[in-house]
Image (cartoon, rainbow, N blue to C red; front, side, top):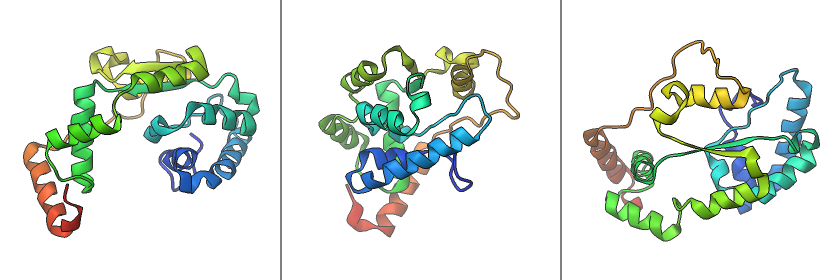
Amino acid sequence: YPVRPDQLHHCELAAALFKPGLRGRADPMLRRLGERIRASDAEVAVISAEWFESVDPGRLAEKLERHMPEHAADARLITYLRPHAERVASSFQMNMRLGYFSGTLEEFHARTLADGRFLYADRLARWREIFGPRHEVRPMIRARLHKGCVVRDFLSYALETPEVELAEEPDANVSLSVEDLALMRELHLVGRPSRRG
Protein backbone atom coordinates (compact mmCIF):
# COMPACT_ATOMS: atom_id res chain seq x y z
CA TYR A 1 0.00 0.00 0.00
CA PRO A 2 2.24 2.81 -1.27
CA VAL A 3 1.55 5.82 0.91
CA ARG A 4 3.68 8.23 2.87
CA PRO A 5 3.86 7.52 6.62
CA ASP A 6 1.41 10.38 7.29
CA GLN A 7 -1.20 9.09 4.79
CA LEU A 8 -4.03 6.59 5.17
CA HIS A 9 -5.33 6.79 1.60
CA HIS A 10 -4.75 8.45 -1.78
CA CYS A 11 -7.43 11.18 -1.55
CA GLU A 12 -4.81 13.88 -2.07
CA LEU A 13 -3.81 12.24 -5.36
CA ALA A 14 -7.42 11.82 -6.47
CA ALA A 15 -8.11 15.49 -5.66
CA ALA A 16 -5.10 16.54 -7.73
CA LEU A 17 -6.59 14.65 -10.67
CA PHE A 18 -9.98 16.39 -10.60
CA LYS A 19 -9.81 19.67 -8.67
CA PRO A 20 -8.77 22.49 -11.04
CA GLY A 21 -6.68 24.34 -8.44
CA LEU A 22 -4.63 21.21 -7.65
CA ARG A 23 -4.06 19.78 -11.14
CA GLY A 24 -0.41 20.88 -11.28
CA ARG A 25 0.30 18.56 -8.36
CA ALA A 26 -0.93 15.37 -10.06
CA ASP A 27 2.15 14.65 -12.18
CA PRO A 28 4.74 14.99 -9.39
CA MET A 29 2.54 12.92 -7.05
CA LEU A 30 2.09 10.17 -9.62
CA ARG A 31 5.80 10.19 -10.46
CA ARG A 32 6.69 9.69 -6.78
CA LEU A 33 4.00 7.02 -6.42
CA GLY A 34 5.38 5.18 -9.45
CA GLU A 35 8.88 5.33 -7.95
CA ARG A 36 7.57 3.97 -4.64
CA ILE A 37 5.89 1.06 -6.42
CA ARG A 38 8.96 0.28 -8.55
CA ALA A 39 11.18 0.32 -5.45
CA SER A 40 8.93 -2.20 -3.69
CA ASP A 41 9.21 -5.97 -3.97
CA ALA A 42 5.45 -6.35 -3.42
CA GLU A 43 3.53 -8.33 -6.03
CA VAL A 44 0.47 -6.07 -5.80
CA ALA A 45 0.13 -2.33 -5.24
CA VAL A 46 -3.17 -0.82 -4.10
CA ILE A 47 -4.10 2.80 -4.78
CA SER A 48 -7.30 3.63 -2.97
CA ALA A 49 -9.51 6.66 -2.30
CA GLU A 50 -13.24 7.30 -2.44
CA TRP A 51 -12.52 10.54 -4.28
CA PHE A 52 -11.49 8.63 -7.40
CA GLU A 53 -15.21 8.56 -8.22
CA SER A 54 -14.85 12.22 -9.28
CA VAL A 55 -11.80 11.66 -11.49
CA ASP A 56 -12.18 11.57 -15.26
CA PRO A 57 -11.23 7.97 -16.20
CA GLY A 58 -9.53 9.11 -19.42
CA ARG A 59 -7.30 11.44 -17.42
CA LEU A 60 -6.42 8.66 -14.99
CA ALA A 61 -5.60 6.26 -17.86
CA GLU A 62 -3.35 8.87 -19.49
CA LYS A 63 -1.53 9.59 -16.22
CA LEU A 64 -1.00 5.89 -15.49
CA GLU A 65 0.43 5.42 -18.97
CA ARG A 66 2.77 8.38 -18.46
CA HIS A 67 3.99 7.60 -14.93
CA MET A 68 3.54 3.83 -14.58
CA PRO A 69 3.63 2.47 -18.14
CA GLU A 70 4.63 -0.99 -16.92
CA HIS A 71 1.36 -1.22 -14.95
CA ALA A 72 -1.06 0.84 -17.05
CA ALA A 73 -2.22 -2.01 -19.29
CA ASP A 74 -2.99 -4.44 -16.47
CA ALA A 75 -4.22 -2.06 -13.76
CA ARG A 76 -7.52 -3.31 -12.34
CA LEU A 77 -10.12 -1.03 -10.81
CA ILE A 78 -12.93 -1.74 -8.41
CA THR A 79 -15.86 0.44 -7.48
CA TYR A 80 -18.06 -0.31 -4.49
CA LEU A 81 -21.48 1.12 -5.06
CA ARG A 82 -24.05 1.58 -2.31
CA PRO A 83 -27.71 1.32 -3.24
CA HIS A 84 -29.03 4.84 -3.86
CA ALA A 85 -31.13 5.25 -0.71
CA GLU A 86 -28.28 4.10 1.52
CA ARG A 87 -25.79 6.33 -0.29
CA VAL A 88 -27.98 9.42 0.08
CA ALA A 89 -28.59 8.69 3.78
CA SER A 90 -24.90 7.97 4.42
CA SER A 91 -23.74 11.12 2.62
CA PHE A 92 -26.36 13.18 4.38
CA GLN A 93 -25.09 11.89 7.70
CA MET A 94 -21.45 12.56 6.77
CA ASN A 95 -22.21 16.09 5.59
CA MET A 96 -24.20 16.78 8.76
CA ARG A 97 -21.48 15.35 10.98
CA LEU A 98 -18.81 17.50 9.31
CA GLY A 99 -20.98 20.62 9.34
CA TYR A 100 -21.17 20.95 5.54
CA PHE A 101 -24.97 20.74 5.47
CA SER A 102 -27.61 21.50 8.06
CA GLY A 103 -30.89 21.16 6.19
CA THR A 104 -33.28 18.22 6.12
CA LEU A 105 -32.75 14.87 4.46
CA GLU A 106 -35.33 15.87 1.84
CA GLU A 107 -33.40 19.07 1.08
CA PHE A 108 -30.15 17.12 0.83
CA HIS A 109 -31.76 14.61 -1.53
CA ALA A 110 -33.07 17.44 -3.73
CA ARG A 111 -29.57 18.94 -3.85
CA THR A 112 -27.98 15.62 -4.87
CA LEU A 113 -30.60 15.12 -7.58
CA ALA A 114 -29.91 18.60 -8.93
CA ASP A 115 -26.14 18.12 -9.07
CA GLY A 116 -26.37 14.50 -10.28
CA ARG A 117 -23.95 13.32 -7.63
CA PHE A 118 -25.53 9.89 -7.20
CA LEU A 119 -26.65 9.26 -10.75
CA TYR A 120 -24.11 6.56 -11.49
CA ALA A 121 -24.95 5.06 -14.89
CA ASP A 122 -23.22 7.58 -17.18
CA ARG A 123 -20.15 7.84 -14.96
CA LEU A 124 -19.75 4.06 -14.70
CA ALA A 125 -20.25 3.68 -18.45
CA ARG A 126 -17.33 6.06 -19.01
CA TRP A 127 -15.08 4.01 -16.70
CA ARG A 128 -16.08 0.86 -18.55
CA GLU A 129 -15.41 2.56 -21.89
CA ILE A 130 -11.86 3.44 -20.83
CA PHE A 131 -10.89 0.39 -18.75
CA GLY A 132 -13.22 -2.29 -20.12
CA PRO A 133 -13.52 -5.47 -18.07
CA ARG A 134 -10.61 -4.36 -15.86
CA HIS A 135 -13.15 -2.13 -14.09
CA GLU A 136 -15.45 -4.09 -11.79
CA VAL A 137 -18.46 -2.68 -9.98
CA ARG A 138 -19.43 -4.42 -6.76
CA PRO A 139 -22.66 -3.71 -4.87
CA MET A 140 -22.03 -2.53 -1.33
CA ILE A 141 -24.51 -5.04 0.04
CA ARG A 142 -23.10 -7.26 2.80
CA ALA A 143 -24.91 -10.38 1.62
CA ARG A 144 -23.20 -9.99 -1.79
CA LEU A 145 -19.68 -9.40 -0.42
CA HIS A 146 -17.10 -12.13 0.14
CA LYS A 147 -17.88 -13.51 3.60
CA GLY A 148 -20.13 -10.50 4.19
CA CYS A 149 -17.17 -8.15 4.64
CA VAL A 150 -16.05 -5.34 2.35
CA VAL A 151 -12.44 -5.64 3.56
CA ARG A 152 -12.32 -9.36 2.73
CA ASP A 153 -14.13 -8.73 -0.53
CA PHE A 154 -11.67 -6.04 -1.58
CA LEU A 155 -8.59 -8.02 -0.59
CA SER A 156 -9.94 -11.11 -2.33
CA TYR A 157 -10.34 -9.02 -5.49
CA ALA A 158 -7.00 -7.21 -5.20
CA LEU A 159 -5.00 -10.34 -4.37
CA GLU A 160 -7.05 -12.59 -6.65
CA THR A 161 -7.65 -15.21 -3.98
CA PRO A 162 -10.67 -16.12 -1.88
CA GLU A 163 -8.40 -16.99 1.06
CA VAL A 164 -7.56 -13.83 2.95
CA GLU A 165 -6.41 -13.91 6.55
CA LEU A 166 -6.84 -10.71 8.53
CA ALA A 167 -4.79 -9.91 11.62
CA GLU A 168 -7.92 -8.50 13.26
CA GLU A 169 -11.59 -8.18 12.49
CA PRO A 170 -12.48 -4.93 10.74
CA ASP A 171 -14.68 -2.51 12.65
CA ALA A 172 -18.25 -2.31 11.46
CA ASN A 173 -18.99 1.03 9.83
CA VAL A 174 -21.56 2.10 12.40
CA SER A 175 -23.73 5.11 11.63
CA LEU A 176 -24.61 7.79 14.15
CA SER A 177 -27.99 7.47 15.79
CA VAL A 178 -30.68 9.99 14.90
CA GLU A 179 -30.17 11.57 18.33
CA ASP A 180 -26.40 11.88 17.82
CA LEU A 181 -26.91 13.31 14.35
CA ALA A 182 -29.35 15.93 15.71
CA LEU A 183 -26.81 16.86 18.39
CA MET A 184 -24.03 17.23 15.78
CA ARG A 185 -26.32 19.43 13.67
CA GLU A 186 -27.03 21.73 16.61
CA LEU A 187 -23.35 21.95 17.52
CA HIS A 188 -22.46 22.97 13.98
CA LEU A 189 -25.28 25.52 13.83
CA VAL A 190 -24.14 27.11 17.11
CA GLY A 191 -20.48 27.05 16.11
CA ARG A 192 -20.91 28.24 12.52
CA PRO A 193 -24.35 29.79 11.96
CA SER A 194 -23.33 31.22 8.57
CA ARG A 195 -23.10 27.69 7.11
CA ARG A 196 -26.80 26.91 7.61
CA GLY A 197 -28.46 25.07 4.67
